[in-house]
Image (tube, rainbow, N blue to C red; front, top):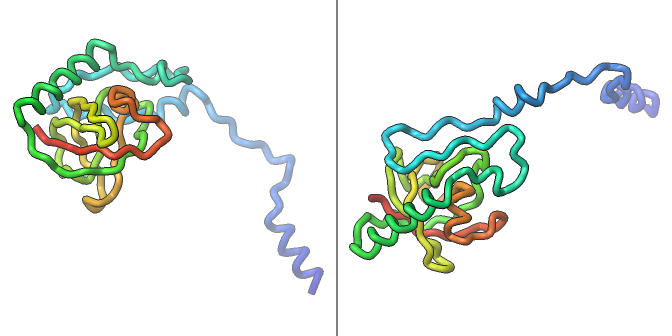
Length: 165
């Protein structure tokens, strides 16, 4: 019986002399780049981060002017009572390599523009609303730039109220 168990275990052991396929870093970096945002949206696009990006600042390619304009637009719409409330969602950091201001959420079924408001501190930003498969009660994903604008910790789950323009 012991011999049978040992022989079975040998089948699970990989031979050390077999070469491990090499991964071309440049090709690998290309494969993880996200799809561009839909052209129908009117928020300002940011350039993609470089393939050598390693820090938060390097991944966040949305300019200070773009962020300021998105905050002002969100505040103006909120002051006027514009936008339709879609609900509150718990958001985590989305794909850090996907530039711009966006939220992927099951609260929308088609791309649109809107804003999110942090439930914790009331800070808001105008952004792209992108559909995410799942029930409306499922979580959402916020862009790196959006999380930074609303001063949300990048590693936390952040509650935001979502509005559609």
